[in-house]
Amino acid sequence: MKLLFVYPEIPDTFWSFKHALRFVSKKAAFPPLGILTVAALAPSEWEKRLVDMNVRKLKDSDLLWADYVCISAMHVQKDSVVKVIARCRRLGVKIIAGGPYFTTSPGGCTDVDHLVLGESEAILPELFADIAQNSPKPVYATTDHPDLSLTPIPEWDLINFSDYDSMLVQFSRGCPFDCEFCDIVLLNGRKQRTKSPEQFIGEIDSLYRKGWRGSVFIVDDNFIGSKVRVKEMLRSLGIWMETHGRPFHFFTEASVNLAEEEGLMSLMARAGFNKVFVGIETPNVESLKETNKYQNTKNDLLQAVKTIQHNGMEVMGGFILGFDNDPETIFQSQIDFIQSSGITMAMVGILNALPGTKLWKRLKTEGRLIGDSTGNNTAFSINFIPKMDMGKLVEGYRQVLDTIYSPEGYYQRCLIFLKTYHQRTVSKIHMSGFMAFLKSLWRMGIRNEEGFRKYFWKLLIKSLFINPKTFGEAVRLMIVGIHFRKSLCTPRDTFPEGLLQLEPDIRRPPDQPFRPH
Image (cartoon, rainbow, N blue to C red):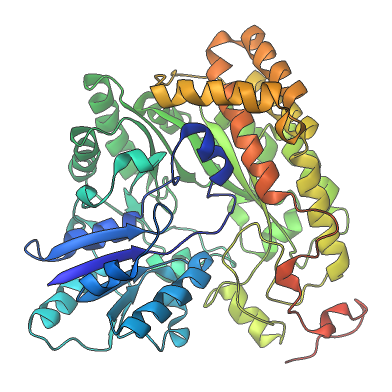
């Protein structure tokens, strides 16, 4: 049996790091961990190939080689998914499809031969057995959340490590919180499931033995959802890192209550963590309560960010505009918070309702849904009627991005971060890092790309005075800043494409009631 695993193309977004990757000569930020794990679940005697469309083009000859084409995707990859499915249909190749997009939006997948709805470990053994018997069913679905001891080591041999900037691994699934807009609970449940320390270290060791060195993203929904289990694992990981010469540096996603756990942050720093993504969402408390994010209302958010930074981890922050309780002053409030926090990597987006979430159900009941979400956290698009005037929301969003990712605004934030950041470890400089430095000297220091030259030199010089160990960090920050400037700041005369399809009703005066569609 021949299986071709296809990972559809991801558009230019906050997380694509498209413009930064050119500095390090990489083709994509991350490999497709889900597909690599699914491939490891397939019978070892079957032939397997992978085409990551973010690394190379998908050819008809690739599709014709396969008995089955296996597609996994997120919502943001929908446009590419549609094209891949159409090509398979044209060539008469059978399709197996799964992943977050298909699981939450199965109604739009009528051209797929076999749908996998749910977590793979609970479904794929049956599917592969049926394929071997030549009797696969159209749909394999489960709401079970399997034990992660069933998860195999990803099939790393299907990728070329040199194509990617960072590797991906997973320690846990699920999140104990229940934010209204989030689909994590829908997909992975509220009960935190973890791998054993031995299983997780085995995956880390597999990367090491394959020759990987550098950045590793632990893609957990909430890394600290089970604090007892994560502390146990971190103790083992810290020992492994020390005995192996500290070959990796890690980053992950966690809730803001990480700032309350000095011992946990210390363990993370010892194990080599230098960044963490935190969902801040908004400084407006009423909006946090609206979306059931009460964990963000218990402590001072700005101080929490500073605490995490001081404990050796850069905070990457998620922010949202468009909550029902957002006042018209929210745009300046978001700017003030982001600038004063020193969060250099601030992912600011307009609220969207993902299929099946509590937000989606509430808005549907209120007659406010007007389309599908793009899945792009930072697109100029919205799939429901907001309470704020649409024009004000769009213009305010544009104002936030133009301010925080202006060369001066970004520089000021980087400077605040370097002054607050208590760097625990210094990452080893690899050849790709040295080449990135040389390219940054030319593109920003001499050519003045995106108007960064003045601030490029200022930040590099000031980093030496703040702490010479932060010089490499300063270079990296400026390179990433180029990506955000190019990806997120649209020309002012370009009307956001995602909003062109909205119905005229969104232009109504704000005091008029909503009309169901």
